Image 1 (cartoon, rainbow, N blue to C red):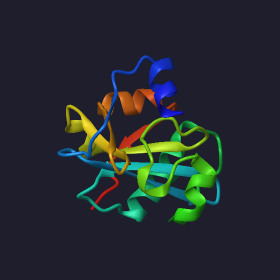
Image 2 (image 1 turned 60 degrees about the vertical axis):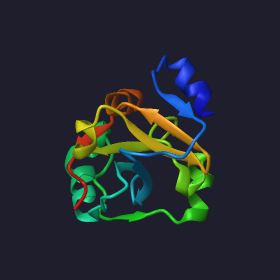
Image 3 (image 1 turned 135 degrees about the vertical axis):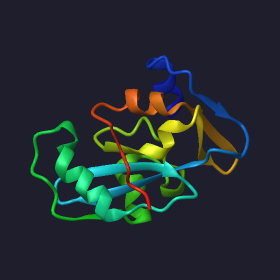
Image 4 (image 1 turned 30 degrees about the vertical axis):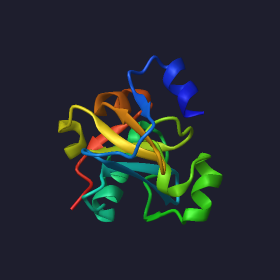
Length: 143
């Protein structure tokens, strides 16, 4: 699924057959009363749910829906049902129907790495993450 997304969108991203080192990002799925949201941030950082809610409310993430009143992490068992990917191995691209917010700190890296499996890593540029997700927003969402 991810490999075909990379090819069909002519991304320079690569899937490496190893464990990630350096510039490691996490992708965490959140749900609001209006929509699902994928937060992309450095693994060393922690999501600030108030900032994430503020971004989702103010920006409306390029969509015409009501601003959410609350936002919460999606339980691990539901993540695969919603995205097709396991909770600990969500990629920052190729998740349809989910809005994306990339932490502004991530944008300063030349490339970032995201675990896809225990022995697989996606290497991708932050600009490709933003460009490959319609309506993606870049904002400060971590503590």
